Length: 126
Image (cartoon, rainbow, N blue to C red; front, side, top):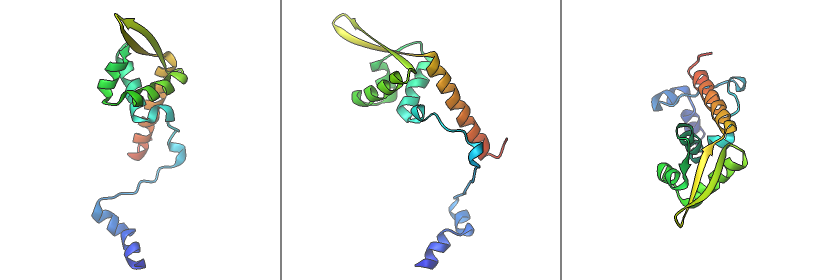
């Protein structure tokens, strides 16, 4: 059994399976904005970057998520000051709209900058 394990970890085995190990120095990879890194929250912030405002239902459709899931993620972004939430009524129907704040825009810019640094580091570019 020990031999089988060491064969799986050998460089020859890694080449045959197409797996490549990339070691990137920690200093080359800035810390990601963890709040935005989550898929739904990144989708919310990105969508609000290209739209002045979006309703709850617009975001739910766009991100293909549930009411509860979207509600949790928008609340976290709102608590961080990245988005603003306004509630009103359209006739008798409640309407919730979201808008990206300047702090949210800066956070997304930092996140994208960090992702670009990671991409460059993994491709071996300074």
